[in-house]
Image (cartoon, rainbow, N blue to C red; front, side, top):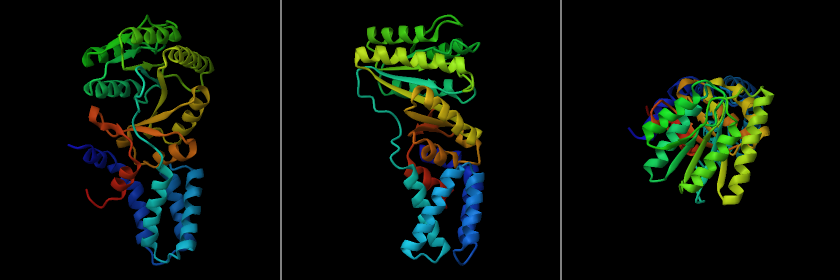
Length: 307
């Protein structure tokens, strides 16, 4: 099964709920009026598009109506899809590894799918011929180190680890040094799936980032911070992202579990409200279900009439 079909299957809940409601608004009436915009506003907010983003979209559509002299609701739906694509543009999915050593520091709360996302990224780039190493920087959660080591064994990649309760920054330091010594192409550093409200743990996260940045600068290595967000948490994911971004300057988002929500509008909210690129989306459990985000493909699949 190709990823396009996986994407269609994974977005089925969103399509059946959000998209069908939107389609009914545009096709179920003969003229464009205030009621249309009010109904659309309600559906968008319920689909986790977010209040700010919803207002932006509605204003853009009203401008389109005036500027293009649109009178048919069905014609306006085409403009609605274009405005969604426009909001999501400039997102270049995936990673550009242009250094000898490239480091991805992965952050996010427990339960977002952080460890499996790390494993899927590692597996993909190992298959592409890159030498990959993992760092078990989540020294806080019981079993986290062992979980990452099991993935390392399955994938055939080295895992740098210390004992539970160790200094996470020290693990990161060891990992960067080891990656350099072993000519690793990609080092993925796990971090504690901390609650974003735990100040002490957020401070530890900043410390880990400082250590990675310092060591990477000496090696001329590339560093990216990837935030893993669970799409099913809706607007709570936005507040998480803001706090993580304040702490460690997030470079990109991996949005997981899109297949588990009927509110796929969170994709639009993440991009528009945070201005952080969506690098990856996950629409299922299989390794192939985590793929580079393509905004055009995403909107096309959502609004396609094909099953």
